[in-house]
Amino acid sequence: MPRPVRIGITHDAIDSEGNFIAPGLGLKLLDAVSDVVYDVLPEMKREVTSQQIEGYDMICSLTPRWTSASLEGNERLLSVHRFGVGYDMIDVPGLTAAGVALCITRDAVRRPVAAAILGLLLALSTRMPLKDRIIREGRWGERAKYHGIGLVGRTLGVIGVGNIGHEVFRLAMPLDMQHIGCDPYISQEDVSDVDVELVDLDTVLRESDFLSICCPLNEETHHLIGEHQLRQMKPSGFLINMARGPIVDEQALIRALSEGWIQGAGIDVFEEEPTPASNPLLGMDNAILAPHSLAWLDQMFDGQWGSILGQIAAIRRGERPAGMLNTEVWESPRFQEKLRRFLESVS
Image 1 (cartoon, rainbow, N blue to C red):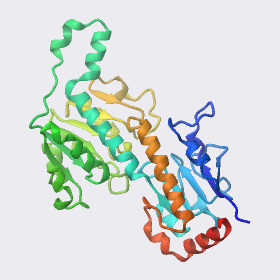
Image 2 (image 1 turned 90 degrees about the vertical axis):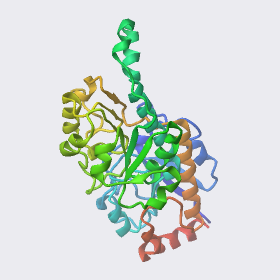
Image 3 (image 1 turned 30 degrees about the vertical axis):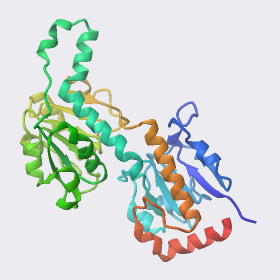
Image 4 (image 1 turned 180 degrees about the vertical axis):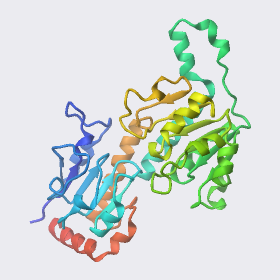
């Protein structure tokens, strides 16, 4: 008799009151699939353990780390489905060696993250948070001290012009800004539709009035933006980071904002998360901050669940899913043997 597909969901998807953190249909989408059963893993651990995932075919994961030890002795798990696109917390070669596919939700986060980046750009250019504060504090008479910055003809720079970076330029086109980008993995033809000039890192730092970081975190990009790079930026420039905190040397950024190397920053990600209450960034008027959640929109969560259910359904049919990152694992003997046993047991 066929058995159901068993799905595990890491515990960080549940809040302190036991409710699913995302609005919208969420788990109801899984409830509607007749041959799927799911469990929320009972404990929240910083690193997934082999004991937690024993007996599951697939795992939906948000923040926990995955290492080779997470998969030790596991000959059943087929795939890890990550809410989002970042995978710096996942040992991808370790998953590949263990015959486990890693799937991410590129399409679901592209627009929400790009729109949030644009929102930070607009808020920085209008000095919106500061103006909100002065009116709430009865300081109407000070409004003339806080002029904004017009965007027409200014230069928007992006480091990492792939999925999200490309969408940032697409959304920004009506603003009549100049577009420059830095990405060694993208060709000029790839960005011809959004009128972007590809330049080197030094140029994008030097010429950008608003500079958005949209690259992944890895060994190559850790502290990609440090003191030297921040000093290359215009004193009137703004830095926006919605990618990963450690791409920017946070101590150098604090100095840049306090000493006027740059004019301001919009930050949704930090080197340490949650960021401590003692972080000097929290007291700076020229920084707009958010707790790594600015793109957490209802449409993003619905899109992520839709993508993940599509991935699960594809594997259930024995087909390679969309959004699979380590594509080479699909043809590996270890994965194919697990897939064969899985399909036989659920058919």
